[in-house]
Image 1 (cartoon, rainbow over the protein chains, first blue to last red):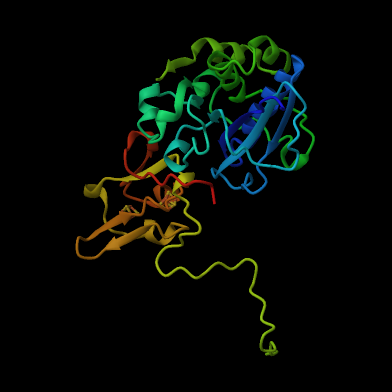
Image 2: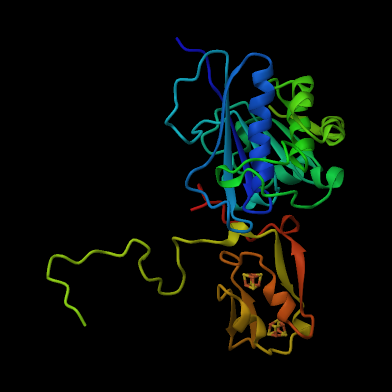
Length: 203
Length: 108
Ligand code: SF4
Ligand code: SF4
C-alpha cells in the first residue's frame, strides 16, 4: 500500500496575501524535500487570487513515497490547515474534510481560545497554533512575484509566510525548522515565529 | 435586431440567475477584515454610504430612520467610511464581533 500523503491546505487573502500563501505552501514543500520527502505544492485553480481580500487556497502534499495523485487538484482531507488571516475563520469552514486530530495554524494577535470560538467543528482539532505574524514582520504586501506562473524574483518567505512557517514547525512534525531555515529568506522572522508561537493541545 | 432561431438559444456563460434581493451565488461577506461600524448619533442620514457602497450593502430603514448594514455581503472595502462626511462610520476589526459569520464551504 502506498504510504500516507499528508495534505496541508493554506487559506490566505487575494492579492494582499497571494504570494504569502503560495510561499507557505512552496516553502513547506521545499523544506520537506530537503529531507528526501516527495512533495507537491500548487494554487487552487478555481479561487480568485487577483481579487482583493477574497479567501483563496494553496496546497502542499508531503509523502515518504512518490505521490500518485497528479490530477487531483484539491486537498479534500487536510491534516494541517494554515490560516494566514484570522478573519477567514468567520467566513469559511476551514476544517472541512479534516479527520479528527488535525492541526490548525492561525496568524493572529488573538489567543487560541478567541479563534476556537469561531470554529464550530473544533472537536476535529488535536492542536491549534497561533502566531502574531504581522507583529513579527509587519503588515505589508511584499510582492506579486510568482503569481500566474511568473518567475518569483523575490524568493520564498520575505513576509508573514516566514513566521507562519516557523509556527508550523513548532506545532507539527511535518517539517523541521532546520530544513525551513535552508529555504526561507527572512530567517529572523522564521525563528521568531517558531519561538513566539502559542501552541494549545486539545483533546 | 437579428433573430435567434428557436431551439438555438445559447445561455451566456457569465450570467447567473437574476437576484431579486440578494445574490446567493456571490456572498462576499467573507472578504471582510474590517467592518464599517455605525455611531447612530453622528449619522445625519446623508445617504452617502448607500450611494457609494459598490455592493448596495447599506439600506435605509425608513420606519426607524437609520441606515442598516448587510453583514452577509459587506466585503469590507471601507469606501463608505471614506465617504461618510460626519465620521459616523469607523473601521472595526471583524474578530471583535460574534455576528457577521457567513462560513461558506468554498470561496465560491
Ligand atoms: S465596507 Fe464596502 S462593501 Fe461594506 S458597506 Fe462599506 S462600501 Fe459597502
Ligand atoms: S454616510 Fe455616514 S452620515 Fe451619511 S447616511 Fe451613511 S452613516 Fe449616515
